[in-house]
Length: 291
Ligand SMILES: N[C@@H](CCC(=O)N[C@@H](CS)C(=O)NCC(=O)O)C(=O)O
Image (cartoon, rainbow, N blue to C red; front, top):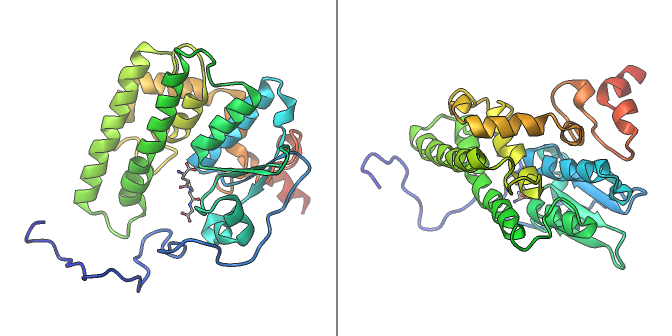
């Protein structure tokens, strides 16, 4: 610690004031339900409770990819969880995910309903259940899972580290921005070197590794996260950009990005999804025009 540090931590930290910055109103140092609220349950076995953040988009892209493969039993209801309003602290949501974070999946197609939380676990669960988008070949599956877990371990430095201090903190502090920019650029270089020699993360096959990584690192380069593409010199990661644009053009990716979306163009927001036809009839522009 340098002499210039202006903060001396107390002996024991206490939560006294909101610490400022975005999300201060929902951050708490404790877990558990804060209010009673059951989750709605629709007609399909798969019930998703989510929001179109990168972690949420992983799962809606996965479900839309499964449906595009003709796996009709992957039909799902997607319910909106407004994390800014504290929906993740309702008793029903906490029963589905004790960690109070989207996305959470309930599978009512099993003998007893199965809860799955953590986006990586949800991708693996769906891939195993429907035997798709995760290689069977024992020579390839470890590569797929290694990249899936790489994403789960790396993205908090991108979101909670870089994104928080570059975009959400009450002030722009040089030290944390430098620290996390260094790490995010290192991660982008990891991806760039790998994608120079591989079409997709697991080689020739598009898998749950791509579905996990693209919503964070692909959308970062497309300037959809933190308005940071120029700052990070996105164009210089040519191989990541090639892979990013290819995945961005996929129909299931376009649909998955729309589900549980509450920001941006109204015709791209399908706040709740209960049927494939909802993409044509229930986007927010149509709902508001009908009101
Ligand atoms: N590791 C978790 C992270 C999930 C996560 O951080 N979700 C955020 C939105 S992207 C959330 O629900 N935040 C609400 C909160 O922290 O109260 C996963 O991949 O599912």
